[in-house]
Image (cartoon, rainbow, N blue to C red):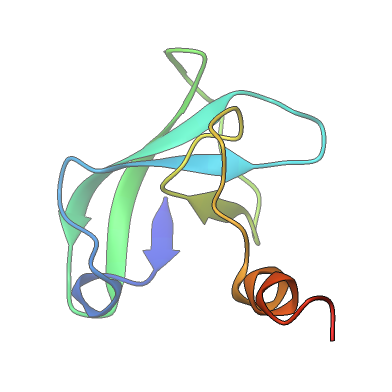
Length: 83
């Protein structure tokens, strides 16, 4: 699959990105090639090659089961006591 983003966003060959999906499928993308603005990768689903991704997938460096850091807006709101 082709990914919009490459060296410009810090991707490197061998990185694993996780698919964020509402249906909770376990998919990831193993980065195989990185150019300045695009990357290429292989999609896997629970360790087996997937038939193919859909356009518009959201990817993360953290798997969905890992604790995610709070977003900046929530952190700022908590720091100001909700104001």
